[in-house]
Image (tube, rainbow over all chains, first blue to last red; front, side):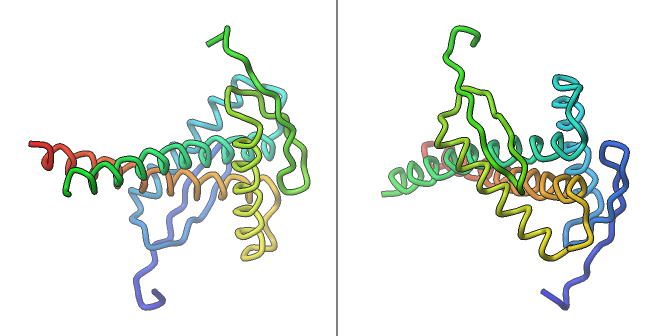
Length: 86
Length: 86
């Protein structure tokens, strides 16, 4: 991993700048950042009294929830594919 | 949706309490909260100078990134399943 080229991408999320370092392309990092920004604005508009750290934690809760649902769906589909191939 | 029973679950994430209201079971909400808590502690241990709101935003970025990768994998698998069924 250490020999692979790492990209540094500066993104703006909810009015704050972040430097994201990783193997992903700049365009991918920008896409992810814009999805997080959108989700924070959506949750923030429904809960205007939340401070930024609580808003960010609830955004993370939301994203992890979506991830776990998608993972369950993927596992069901993998099982179905194995049955189809038999 | 409004007729469905909503659960209120109090969880602790990174030392703060949150009340999560939704259709998900309490045990599911607790699982998600513990995953977010773990991820925040993991990112926080690698970046001890981050304040809680930046840490939470980076946790959300991480979770959305995992979600998008899983979504791509799911779409590839769905296409494969369609081919298998033909």
